[in-house]
Structure formats: C-alpha cells, structure tokens
Length: 115
Image 1: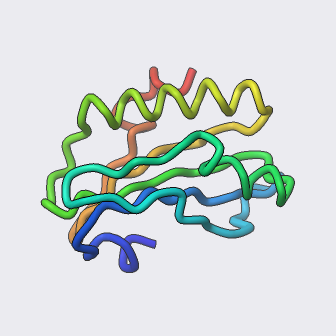
Image 2: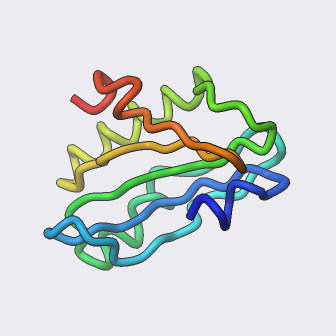
C-alpha cells in the first residue's frame, strides 16, 4: 500500500478491512484530498467494512510533503474513528502515515488514542 499511495501528489485516506484472523479482505479509498489535507466521513471509512463483515480495520493516509509528523487533524481523525468503531463493533487497529520513504504507526507512537 505504501508504494501505491506514498508517491501521490495529493492526500488519500485508505481503509483496509480485516477478517477475524487478522487477514486483509480488501482496501477502500475513503477520501481524496489536496496536497495538505484529505476530507473523509466516518461512513465512507466504515461502509465497506460493514458490507464485508470486517471485524477490524486499518486506516492510512499519505503525506505528499514527506513529513511523518502527525497533525492535530490526524489525531482528531483517529480519535473519531476509534469511537465510531467502538459503536459499530469494528476495531480500529492502527492509523498509518505514509511517505515515499517511510511510514509511522500512530498505535506505536500514540497508543493512548486506541484505548
């Protein structure tokens, strides 16, 4: 996934639907944005997860500028999706930020967001 979206000239927000064994079922582009932000809705992230009976999701978005630093908006989006997932019974496993050369896991960096 990093190869496909990390080099993009605009931000993409992607969700990966996971089965009960932790295997990917599919991925879905939930939003396409500009060079510095990407709008998405909770429903656009969870729609295919619900339709495919996913038990969990991973989410990711790219930073075309190359920075791995999460923004305030990235933190707020993660908190919103984790809360929505709790209501829907679909666990948000992680939120990755992708660049052409590296990535960061918000679960590893900010595990408190996922509790």
